[in-house]
Amino acid sequence: MATGADYLCLNGGGGGGGGGGDDRRGRVECLTKFVEQASLESQRYYLSRKTVMEMLRDRGYDVADSELTGSFTEFLSEFGDNPDILKLRISASLHSHPDKKMVVVFMGTEEIKLANIRGLLCQIKNKESLNGLILILQSKMNHYARKELGQFPSKVEIFHISDLLVNITKHVLKPRHEVLTAEQKQQLLNKFSSEDKQLPRMLVTDAISRYYGFEKGQVVKITYSGGLVDSLVTYRCVT
Image 1 (cartoon, rainbow, N blue to C red):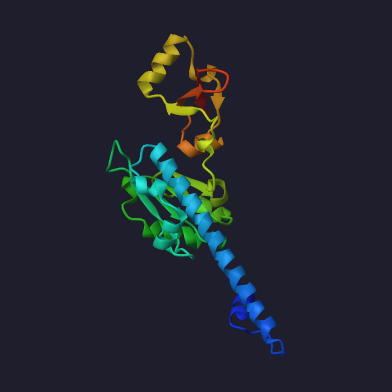
Image 2: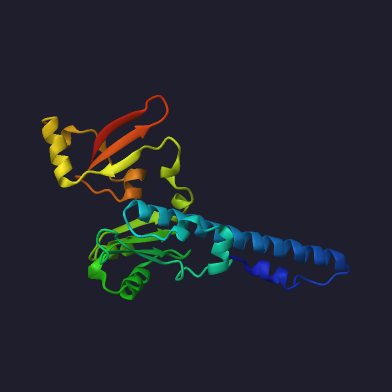
């Protein structure tokens, strides 16, 4: 965002003086700075929104291919160089249950307070039918605002925009993660005559757990391929 000084510079303010050429150079430098700042902000929105789209598809939500392959230029064409965060919101349906939706909301740059969350929750319709709500933060959320989120009828997940600029699952060495069904989980435990607590653990706060939306008690099949081995499978219980 441009500061007051940036706008002053763009408008040619800041005093008279005899050097017209210097004034022009100053205005060009300020204009360049303004454009760079706006472009940087747009890039952050573009990269984070693309990662969110990939995350939703990996969780089983319907996401159009164009949302995953669109270029930064196409993003600017649709949202502009200074995007309106309201237009960045996402609503996606679960492929297996189209009536279940996930809503993603980008929050502003100001500190998030109780009034902001109350206003947001009032805007969201059909809360009871939602599968979840994801908030993308750019600033801190105070204690009272976080507490208010507990009133939401479905799961609320919070990510900071800086954590979504790169998709952590796209690394060449990252293994594949799959959640076992209740039946598959029981078959696994029977096979090894073990209980959940005897399996290796995976914290629900782990970055990969948060990306896929894993929940406590789930068992995840992790498949490693490439590198030193053709294929290696392990299982972890989310705790």
